[in-house]
Length: 409
Image 1 (cartoon, rainbow, N blue to C red):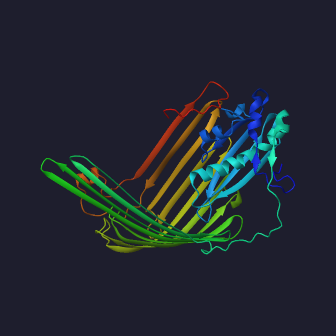
Image 2 (cartoon, rainbow, N blue to C red):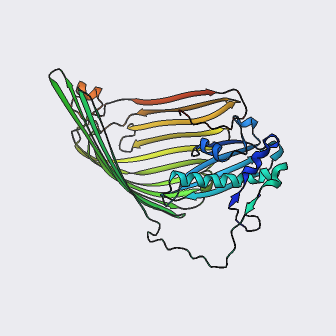
């Protein structure tokens, strides 16, 4: 059902009248939305029952978002009716500005949440109590404002942190610059970042000081070829004392195929990406292969799957890179991240990753000190790396709890 009602814009929906007769209210909502403030929603919209479990709801609301070309966010609410509302499904799409505040964003999604729930209220006996107010129509022509930036966005950020005690202290400074323009047909992104980290340790009469510096810059151009195909060109230059890079540059053209149309990326995607090119590397110290500088042809392949459903979301990635001058020098890895409702009240969350590493040709041939090893001041030889997280959540009790009480939160 559309919400314009013969072209008139609904600006105010008086849901509060519905709260006067809660006993007959039959709109039970289950909201799954990562960007939503659930306490704010419950406080602002008190005329619905908020279902604790999806099986107790007759309206399911799924919220998703992704960044727009202007640096703002594009949001999507998917509404699905169940039981007596079966077949009443719709999707609302709206956007926030790049500089929108938390309050502005909350007001924006609350407005669209109310609009999306309106058809379900109209199907209840209380639908006749809903009131509308419409703005006066005008014949004045609205002119589009000219964008002086022509779609370009510049983002500059910097931050620092420090901590210390009697025997140790540390300082970290990070800065980042990003310039980009995104259109339906192409996108161009340029950026640079710098990181400085310094640590001091004292033990008995010994004092140790370690400094790590890294710099990275990049240019990425992506062309939309069709609903499923994309072409890209990626170039970068950087340095890292941790990784033994005085200079590390790369240039790689790329192709990507998405099994699903890109316009469905809110809900699902299966992308296969391939890059091939070369790196020019100038090392700080001579490597274990007795190199001070070299050109390295390389190829990269990645497969990424993402799915967002009312019962949860899943992200799976398989990736690999390989030097073409020696095919035995490669890295192969994967990760999985999902949060899924198993049965009523029981949810499981898992995030894990593993990499098989056979391409550390940048390692310095000089010996690693015990301090460098323990404090992670240099990259160390390893055949693998892994990480993981597992969580379970089980909830029983009242089906609906609409009360918000922030005391001592």
